[in-house]
Image 1 (cartoon, rainbow, N blue to C red):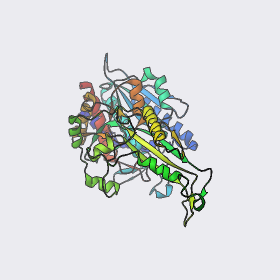
Image 2: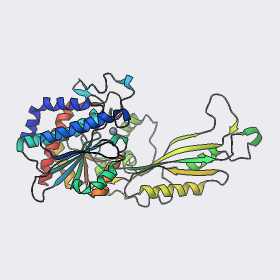
Image 3: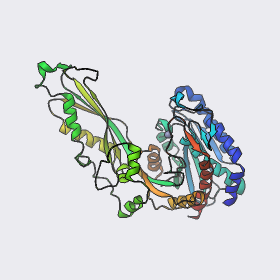
Image 4: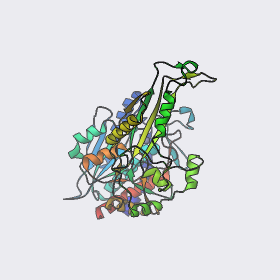
Amino acid sequence: METAVSHARTQYDQYLEQLLELLRIPSVSALPEHRSDIQRAADWLAADMRRIGLEHVQVIGTAGNPVVYGDWLHAGEGAYTALLYGHYDVQPADPLEKWETPPFTPTIRDDKVYARGASDNKAQMFSQLKALESLLAVHGRLPVNVKVLLDGEEETGSPNLPAFVAAYKEMLQADSILISDGAMISSDQPVIEYALRGVISGEIRVSGPGRDLHSGSYGGSVHNPLQALAEIISKLHDEFGWVKIPGFYDRVVSMTAAERALLRQVPYDEAQWLAETGAPKPWGEPDYTLLERMTARPTCEINGIWGGFQGTGDKTIIPAEAGAKISMRLVANQDADEIAELFTEYVTSIAPETVRVQVTIHAGANAAVTPFDSAEIAAAMRAYKVAWGAEAVRSRAGGSLPIVVTLQRELGIPFVLMPFGLDDNRHSPNEHYHLSHFTRGIATAIHYYHYLAEA
Ligand SMILES: [Zn+2]
């Protein structure tokens, strides 16, 4: 594998030039005017995949943006198969005036490449492809079978991928999923995330009188919808932060002592939390560490609340209606649909008869979890150790990646999240990627495929 790593080093200038070319394509999935750029990025990647020696390379249309697929399946009878997932679409670049250099004119400063999509996800995904290129160039083969699936709608929630995965289940069948997206803890501290939270969101609307009422004429006789909403919201948690929706925790798989010990190895403390959040003091379930509350525990958050008069000065009314947006982060084995029902039932049950309460639920996704002691994660830790010279910690992620849930549900296989990015700029102006991460990411992936074959 050293020869593949040194080959990647000798090819560095070309690999970087190719990455810059990919970054020049403004493949913004959220904006219809970039539809042809999306197609261009997909075609560009398919051509690169063919050139490096992947087979069955196709750009496959969906109801939305196309998927790029390719594979290399000659590792031998009964050989291991890894499914590499990445996405070639990017977030919109605005606000443009906040960029020091144009988002689709990749620019190198201080050993970093600045461009929209640099970190999320083009350079990370491309490191994986360049690892395959290096291995194929040097050995003419890969240590394991590899299937590559590149999504063009990740930044808009991959709306068409579940149907695609269901339709191409046979073609995508593999032993595990590999994704290089997301962030390391720092440049010196790799992390492998083995769990993602699910999410479900909705709205509570409270209405009372048919119109805003004069508080002098009717005050004292009408249950104010804003007050009723506040009463409902105040019953969502107890004073310790425990969610009071009956049944909410029934299916939650509790962490083992071994897992809690593992999470204590993740370098994260209150000082860092204070610096990150700017909040005066932590809050939440006292039995859990901050990291556990942020990643391993389910939550219920009020994201917004509205109603009544918001202008300057006074307006003495009883508002006709009020509302709140709610979202819940879920953990294994909570079911998003069931939680939605429990939430609706609970809110309805505590709703006073003096107002009308309506609950609406939006689409949700379940949590995803994979064994933290799997052979795949062990192989990834060995790979990071060689390429980064540091022991990767294993942790949970607080956020959600619905695509992992879809792939896991359809294919029933474990996943490895192998991030090479940093958390400083993704989705923001001046998005960038450290070039040292580009080379080390390629080396990590090369080692990973070897260790995977050994395991
Ligand atoms: Zn993103």
